[in-house]
Image (cartoon, rainbow, N blue to C red):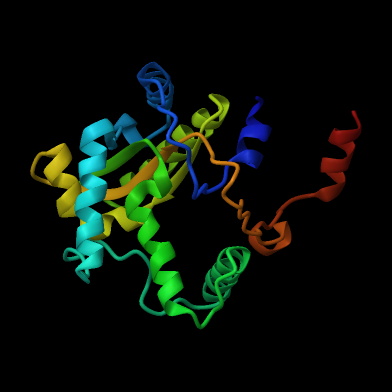
Length: 231
């Protein structure tokens, strides 16, 4: 699988089989992902991979919290600005409409949407999860490095025939995650990453992307580009 195919086939999968993911595959992926660039080579990611009984216990605990109406732990960072401006709010709404529409969940069915959101904390059935932390004393640049690291992980998983789903939703119940992985003091849980083999019985949802000219501006001599392309 070349890099273009890996990027094109990567999506947030929300339905996995119970087939175990071999530890040696995860180790190979994470060893390669360590080559991700980071400012001054700080490598600010702290990853914990959870499978088997510990993951089952974590899923059970968070399911109990959800069922009890627990709103979650005090937030350590803001997932989204309180008031998203245009065009971000429109993109967010469109993505929700596409996702829930593909699942047959109407916009006004709040209970069904809550049930779908709750599947985050079951890792959508995935048998493996990665929890990515960062030192709370680091800054915005290092948080950006985490994004590059996670993208490397997700693309390498595709090269291994695996899928994933990145979930900042896990930060909502970060104390339950901490009970399982026991991170040192001073680390902030950025997100979880569900990992596994896609369940083809679960409907796939692929959310649209903005057209190139909406997000990219080319600055330069187009004539020169054309001349170089013709060589």
